[in-house]
Length: 99
Image 1 (cartoon, one colour):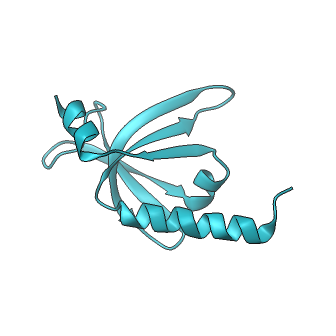
Image 2: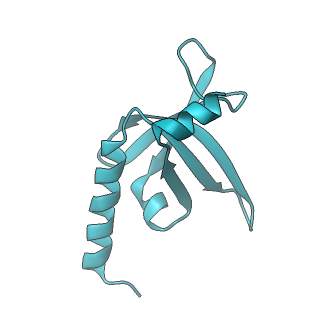
């Protein structure tokens, strides 16, 4: 069992990392049931004290102004428990995805 103080420190680090990448592109790996995962690319649009919001497009492309989008919210504990994984995309990676 992990130490409570360690978990608090990890949670603080996760919140800081997410806040520092607000507005950027992220790749989310979502647990989708037993041994199934779904990868999505979206924009980290809003960060709140207990959750954060990622914007996606219907067709799976990178969200840009004027495209049809939807949002999903995630809690920091989803990241802490590794139920969902987040990877921050660099400008170079985002440019490659845009084509």
